[in-house]
Amino acid sequence: METAGIRVRFAPSPTGPLHLGGVRTALYNYLFARQNNGKFILRIEDTDQNRYVPGAEDYIIKSLQWCGLEFDEDLIKGGPYAPYRQSERSAIYKEYIGILLDRGHAYLAFDTAAELEDARNKFSNGHEQFQYGMKTRLQMKNSLSMTADEVKSRIDRGDRYVIRILIPENLTVIFNDLIRGEVKVLTDSLDDKVLFKSDGLPTYHLANVVDDYLMRISHVIRGEEWLPSAPMHLLLYRFFGWEYSMPQFAHLPLILKPEGNGKLSKRDGDRLGFPVFPIEWKDPSASEVSHGYKEDGYLPEAFINMLALLGWNPGTEQEIFTLDELISSFSLDKINKAGAKFDPAKARWFNHKFIQLKTGAELYAYLDPVLRSNGISADPEYVMKVISLIRERVELLPDLWKHSVLFFRAPDTYDPQVKLKIWQEGTSSFLEEFSAMLKGLDPFNKESLHALVEEFTAGKKIKTAQLMNPLRLLVVGSNQGPGMMDIAAVLGKDEFLERISKGLKNI
Ligand code: GLU
Image (tube, rainbow, N blue to C red; front, top):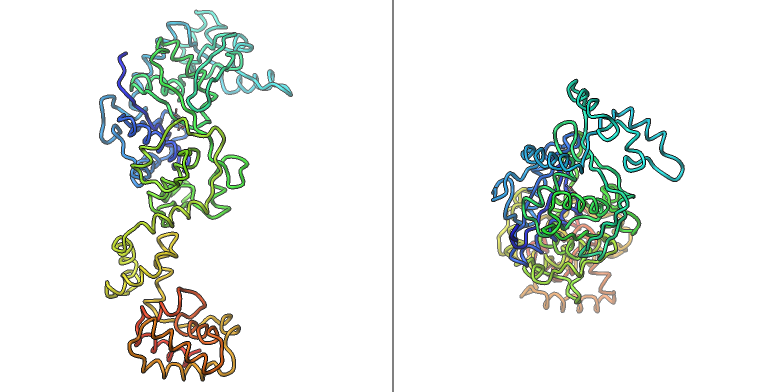
């Protein structure tokens, strides 16, 4: 087969939501394709009907859309190798399993669930688990152990059967993994995996190899959990006579728990309070809703940047990358072999950095609808002033509202804990005096305020904090927020004075 250039695929099974590790796999495929002017393909591997979860396919597509990873060939766009959903390709797999049977590389197996269970009990012992393979296959019910007549009569009477690969004995399979280097496996350790199920559909292994070949995939970039299957896949390529146009493999390291031991799971996210899914997932069976990075207020560019560096290093100190920069810097040989520890604080750090790169107008576009939904209509110029004052404190998008609400709503309550700490005898009376002086302040700005505060505190022989802390409590309702002078300057004289007088009445 002539080469078709760089063609990579993301091949998820719609068995649930896409975990952030899956998004990273898609991302690395995408970066590799774009960098090499290649094609990035989506293939839905849905031949395991038992594990099919309604909504998962749609979820996967929407998640990757949010991330900005666009496919060149997929279910919607189509492409030269359509269909891209494996359940629609069953006739193709039937043809190819036929080839393997004809060539004696596969055989029919009639063992029932109970017979397999018996074999598991019979053949497993302390150090060895039952494997359907060279040591056991002749004692099982299959077309190798039975006569042709027996096989025929079983088929004729409608017995259910699967088709298994016949793993050759005592053969060393060697291939080069682009991340791990040479991988060498003795076939004796492999089992005769099922290639074709009794429901008339292939298993992952057969469908994956046939499709990668037919879709002219040049590189298989996928999770490390598939590394143990790769030697068997190589055998399949060989049996079909495709070994010399077989894709190159790159098995990506795991994403580990923040503590470093074991694979990152949804439970870790629940336990430590961070999402593991890109966008919200509503579990159709459990009516459980898991929030995603999107809903938590992450920018897709920050999420992508964070994922890119989880297992890959650019070889420089650079940490912030646009998607275009990722495309040009990415390389498979800088992917680490070891697992990458997930760091939720670092994820927020990336988001903070990307928020700082947004223009005031972009942040306005986010905040404006939030203000409206809270019944606030504010002058855009005022909103922009607020944004420029608080943006530096924003990690996640909802922080924009959290940090700006004080500029749109005067407090109704005053934190009693704070009051207890800072309110002393005489505080009320010198605040009244100070506010009378404020009334005459003209111009009213940071500098003039500063000067007034200095003059006032010196005259009263009090520390600046003795004035500013109570002032903050009256104006903000707590001990939070940006610098008091900044707050005052943005609120303006009238609002500032009004809050002080309201506060003095209510506290
Ligand atoms: N369907 C497999 C999965 O969901 C794809 C593995 C591969 O890329 O070969 O992980």
